[in-house]
Length: 145
Image 1 (cartoon, rainbow, N blue to C red):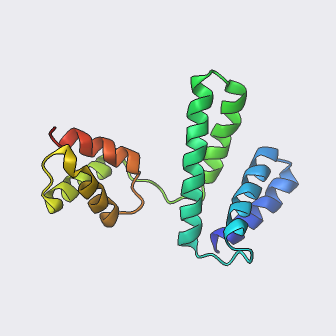
Image 2 (image 1 turned 30 degrees about the vertical axis):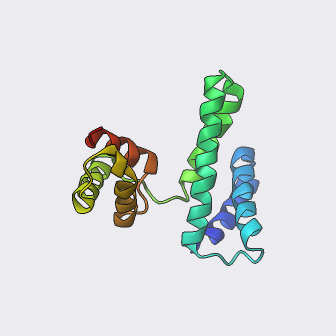
């Protein structure tokens, strides 16, 4: 079953159970797909890229809502993030990410923070599902100034 089919099934279930947040989130995900491909024939890898971008924008919105103490906005965003996570591949643990970063540093021969771009390119080549922000933070800690 493709991601698009899962979303369509999820929309039907959310309508039956009258779960408005889930319904609106799934409809938003479907609209993201249809905005790129009107026939909804995108490959799952392309759909995941779209969802990662949307997930990142939701995270930013949540951070901003929390910074200004708008819990009325933050709570629905948290629920929406959880729903979007269901369709994303599981991210690596911090320990697994650190192993990848160390391996990328060794392969690229990076020494200083000026080589951070090379390290990040190496990490993404090793595993594209890694959380870029976590990998960048770990690489910055491991590289010297």
